Image (cartoon, rainbow, N blue to C red; front, side, top):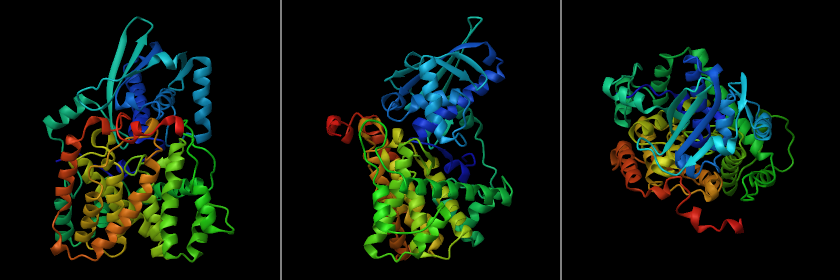
Length: 475
């Protein structure tokens, strides 16, 4: 049995553009600082070196891995750091060749020399990074981490120990796959969200669950709002123009609002025609991932690169399907989405560096489809069917970011993932589960086999597909 994976593990608040290449390394740096403090080495440290391996090295520049490492080593928290402070801190480190280690002590830091991009892959995982601290007594301390997708960071020895000890989950409903989830729903006569809620209550209070789920949603809503109201060119050198701003202006017209909440209510008043539904959903997804590409604050869902799908589909439900929906439905949606994501993580991967984009956009589309299906009255069987349909039509999708940036084709792929999620939910609602031919667990197994068969150049390396087909000089 796997360790417990909470909704709050799958939906994390952080900074863009990538959960595996930005948030993961940032968290790894924080953990390394913790090890230095535990070993009483921090105050002795006179230099830090970071070695990046595999996909972290090949696309690390475009994914702002180096910036994330500097922020992490500086003791900044990606969940709470003021976004406007990010560029100032990075610029200060580069200008002074000095970093305030752990936000406590200044040491020399030459980012061009002290962050090393090694193209070779470590055997345990394609996203490896090793920190080395050099002390004033000529001793060294090294620690290696692996960013395995969705902001999750592990150490190889811990994973090996976990396998040997067979650490079990303490949830009352221990779920390793979709079949077990469905069994619980059937025997307990509960919805998917209700099973998830019981598990969450075993770890934290109902008040905390409510507060944290709403904090996640409010972060998503604010992210969409910012994206819809920001124009200009995205950073990175591809000269990608933000599109959500113009699309939003064309859709909403003249309106009076002054906050994300009043903006949402204003949209709910708008008479939306069929073609505009597609535009609104696309606008919401574009908005999130443009914010993500600009190193803004987003929610991993299950990753940063796929952060736009779930909020776009939830907004679709609030704006189009049910104007009376509120906090109850929002929490229900997020809990179902989080559980489906955790099942994919246990049975396959949510890392594009391991499985291609099917592991990011495909999983996020499945999560959103399942959540929407439950809100629209689907049975647990139909909820799992919706997730299966969404993933079935993302199988084999490669991760080939142009210039190593989470922009082309990543931003548009979020719009397509959101549309597919809505379609998958509708198809599931119109289907008798008795007629379903492919169970969700079988699709998850197939996704993992596809990931293992996929050529490494299509796994977030920028060495294949669109990444080499597009002439950067034309961008």
